[in-house]
Every structure is written in C-alpha cells, then in structure tokens.
Length: 89
Length: 148
Image (cartoon, rainbow over the protein chains, first blue to last red):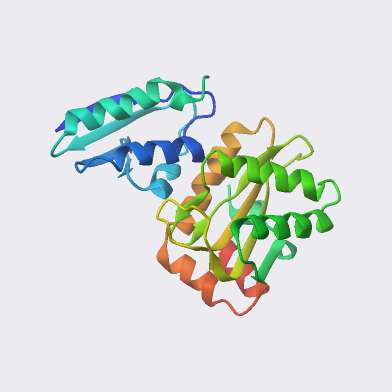
C-alpha cells in the first residue's frame, strides 16, 4: 500500500474542474484510491467526495493507494497535482 | 457556509421543460437575468457554456452544478432548477441530468468557492437529498429541503 502526502499547488485548489480531472485519472485505475487529510479520507474516484475536501492552494493531502497498479496510479495522480492540474498556475 | 446563505425561495424553478443542455442553460440564464438586473442573460449564458466546454459540470447521479465567475457578481449566488425530464449533459457517468444547482461566483472568490462546492457536494452527494428534491411538490418544498 502507498501512503504518501501530496500538496495542492495550483492557484484555484481542488475546485470542480480540478476534481473532475483527478477523478478522470483515478477512474482509470482498478486499485483503491483514497484522498484526504487525517480526519477525513474519501474515495478519490468520486467527484462529489473529492469536492468535499475543499482543498485550497497549499493544502497537504494524504493519498492512500492499495491494490493492483498502485504505484502507477499514485504516479499519475502526483503528476496531475504537481502539474497544477494543467491549469498553468 | 450553508446553502441558505446563497439561495432564496425566488431562485428555485421547480419544473423547467427543456430538450437539451444548451436550452436548459439558456432558459435558466434568461430566468435569472429577469430576477437580477445586474446580470445580462446572454453574458450569463455565454459564461456558463464556456465553463461547460472546459468539462461538463454534470457530476453524476442526475446532478449538475453549472457555474461561472462573473465580474458583475459581487456575492456567491445560487439557483436550484429541476427539469421535468432529464437531459443529456455530457455528465461524468453519462446519465441524464434533472437537478441543477447554478452557481455564480465573484471573480476573486477562490476559498469561498471551494467552501460552497464542498457544501453542495455534501448535500447532493446524498441519495436521500436528491430523491427528496425530485419528489418535492413545488419550489417552496424544494427550498425547505435544500436549506434543511
């Protein structure tokens, strides 16, 4: 199981479009993916759940990935987040 | 932040009959502009459509949260619309949409925007909440459910 922290760096944070992109990436993987912070971990494949986090720029989130292809799934999510969700800022 | 902070009973439309995503956003824009003279219906429609082109706000389970940032918008404003028939909204789960929560956001309200999205997700993410809105007799009943 992968259990890593990841920081939201894009200006707008995990707003609806970013959340949709995240879910598009996580949905391609069959492994179980959860995202959140200590108190609240949610299903990273559900856009409504991801939006619940209201994660603004600078928020440190925990990513828990378990199952087949976990490393690839984690890498894909990390790439999206670290690439500012392709928003350029 | 609560739904009651951004929604009024006047900004609920219980039974809008539309054949498409585009028509529904057009009708909603006209209806909202009639109530709020600070918004121009064509400008509103264009802003909502532009946002949809970046990716559908149909978030699954028949729910869409069309939204846009507007310079003419001074506070986050919500409106709730129920369609008589579900329309194709290019939704994430490809299911038709029949409940729309329209969100108009000031240009710079980033954190507030995230907070209200979280509030809406908490409510609309619940099957019971969605079904209550679908079963509600009229706009007033929908309002009471939405702000409960």
